[in-house]
Amino acid sequence: DALPEVKKFMKNGGHIVSIDTCEPMMQFVGMGMVDLLIGQNYPAMGSIGVETLYKLIKGDKSVDLGDATHYIDTGYELADINNWKEVLATKRPW
Image: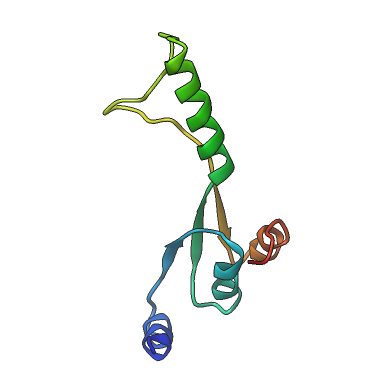
């Protein structure tokens, strides 16, 4: 069980940033165990991916696939102690 070590780390000034703002992760922000959650926009990732593939299949030459200097932004959300309840309200339980 890593929970005692995490609590000790946080008590000694440690900060934890984690990925995914899915419903189960929100409890850790509320408990003060995670300072920040960074959530990916999965619906946008899926829809932009499908739209891009469709355009490529149809031969659309204007499709932007990104490169080393930029990427396709699908959005994100942040959850911390200030807004975790509002973000949680937008989630469905697993």
